[in-house]
Length: 497
Ligand SMILES: NC(=O)C1=CN([C@@H]2O[C@H](COP(=O)(O)OP(=O)(O)OC[C@H]3O[C@@H](n4cnc5c(N)ncnc54)[C@H](O)[C@@H]3O)[C@@H](O)[C@H]2O)[C@@H](O)CC1
Ligand SMILES: Nc1ncnc2c1ncn2[C@@H]1O[C@H](COP(=O)(O)OP(=O)(O)O)[C@@H](O)[C@H]1O
Ligand SMILES: [K+]
Image: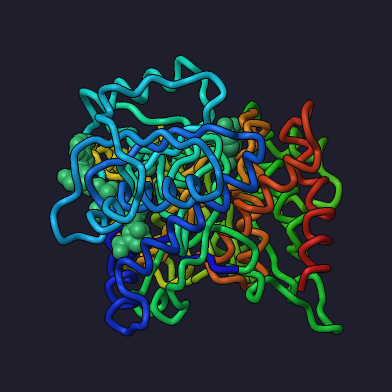
């Protein structure tokens, strides 16, 4: 499985290096790209006897001319519409010359019922909002509900950010080349792409590796090798001990979800550290999870060092106030180095003095993971939330600033490491939009960290497992159900090892 996700700039560097190494030249790559799209059109739309191919002025349009010519030779009635002409001497101009169909201006295009539309107007080169004739073509197509097969990306979707520039085709199917681009995975672009097929056009894996991509699809192959495995003589504490900090008497449920999830993710022991006032409430709800009174940072630190705590969940149910932030700074500054997952109200508490936290986190030597949703992210990183870059870019900048792995939640969860690596999760489901599911996620991360999984991999694996657990349960799930679905998910992963 090829997991690299290439920015449009990295993709064009791959093209350049492939061409430089030979034997394929730029036109050879274009022919292969066009062939891949045409054969997808023929196999996936076998009943389509008429196809409208819409071509732009660049290489995306070049691919479109290749598609049109192949479909024509296959006996299909092809109508060709062009927006602008390719520059003289380019591969696209050659493809235009080699295509035997005379294009009509895009302004004359109107969708015909039953026709398949091949969108080859803009791809990786989209650099400003679509407007005018192209915008109208997109709108007509949407009104006619004509099926769209997009070449590389639906025109209007930014390959870099997944944002819609002006407006965009909603494709049923998108054929892209060599590897996915961020725009295929990030919202809203992902929705416009429909099903995405990645076609091999002859760009060697070694060339992709040589451009040093740092973003990946979050699939098990990304982290499978780092999943915990236990020696035969393991005992509960050596399997990994998690401490989860409870809120006050009326805010204990969230952290119990985290604690249960940490245990289900494989931690050998999980202890809830509870303020005295909440001890009885917690006691009434716990069985395999242990309970310990804890009213201060000093007591917590004693416990962490005495009981060899390897990972901490800090946030669900805590007060979003300065004492919470102060306790976290105390924990991080004490010289113990357990892995720490900072979630929920603790992130809001840190936003009272972000710089104070970033100083402490920069000096921290243990693994650190922050799991904000967009609202919490905007509180801790207001300038990054306001900037125009992609979700991927925002998560990466935040990870660098906080010296922590940042898992930015949502339907297109992004996990970013301060070392520059990032992964985009694709298996999320709206089933997870239910109260408490984030608490389960932070617990899974802590459970994996306690077993020694590195922070970036643990966060990626947890995001994937969390969504798989939801999918295995289906409609009707509540967050309480998610930990119980983890054994099935883990069992399937184990079977794939
Ligand atoms: N050698 C390569 O790089 C390969 C590229 N391929 C195709 O080439 C595409 C990239 O080609 P290009 O870099 O030429 O880019 P595009 O063909 O996507 O678009 C570039 C052209 O569109 C114009 N443009 C961009 N946004 C516009 C807007 N909103 N309104 C009006 N005009 C706009 C630009 O000024 C430029 O003329 C890929 O998406 C892929 O389909 C494939 O042929 C495979 C090989
Ligand atoms: N529409 C959605 N599609 C996929 N995942 C979602 C969606 N909405 C929420 N999630 C996921 O559900 C979890 C919700 O976490 P969070 O917002 O912290 O909720 P809570 O605080 O109630 O636990 C996150 O992992 C998030 O990525
Ligand atoms: K396109």
